[in-house]
Length: 251
Ligand SMILES: C[S@@+](CC[C@H](N)C(=O)[O-])C[C@H]1O[C@@H](n2cnc3c(N)ncnc32)[C@H](O)[C@@H]1O
Image (cartoon, rainbow, N blue to C red; front, top):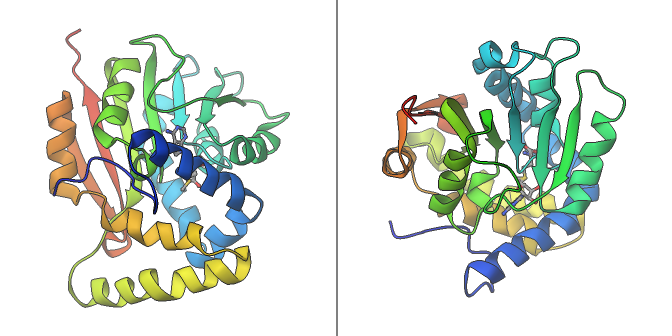
C-alpha cells in the first residue's frame, strides 16, 4: 500500500486534499450527528464510550493534559469528559472545520469539567512539544492528508510516557466484510445523499476507509514514527477499532 493520506475526489496534492476534506465537513456539519447515528444505528456511541473507558486511568487525573484532535461535533470529547473528576483541567478539543467545531462548542458550553474548542490543523498543532498526557482522535486520522505527518505531530505534543488513542474504521474480512462492503459502498452513500442532499461527502467516506492502511500497516507506521506498545483492539467484528500507543518514557 502506497497511500500516504486522504485523497478526496479531485485533490491533487496534500494542500488540496486538506482543503477538500475541510469543505466536506463544513458542508455536512448541520447533518453530521444525525447521519452518524442513523448510518451506524447508534453503535458510534458505544465506540466513543468504549474508547474513553480505555483511558479512564489518565482521565481520572485532574491535572492530566488531554487533546481530542479532529473532535468534530464533540461526541468523543463528551465521552472523555464523563471520566474527568470535578474541577479537572479542561480537555482541548481541536478541529479545522469551524462549522463542525462550533457545534461541539455548544455541547461543551457551561460544563464542569469542560472542554476548550480550538480551531487548528492536526498537522500543525498550536501546542508546545511534550505538553500532553493523552491525545485521542476518533475517525480523524483517516481524514488527514498525511497519516504519518499526523502521527508525528501527535508524538511531538505528547509527553514522554504519554498515550495515544486512535479510533477509526477498518475493513473486516470474511462474510461480515463482504456484507459490510455492500452496505458501506452502496447503501451508506445513498442514505447520506438522501439526508444531506449532496453527493460528494458520503461517497468520500467509503473511499477514505478503503485507502486507510489495514491494522498491521498502521501499527508498523506507528512504530516507525517512534511509538511504543502499539496495539489495535477491534470493535464490532473489526468494523472499527482502537489503536493505542505510548510515547517512549525516555525523553
Ligand atoms: C469523521 S469526523 C470525526 C469527528 C468526531 N471526532 C467524531 O468522532 O464524530 C472527522 C473530523 O476531522 C476533521 N479534520 C480532518 N482533517 C483535519 C485536520 N488536518 N486538522 C483538524 N481537523 C481535521 C474534520 O474537520 C472532521 O470534523
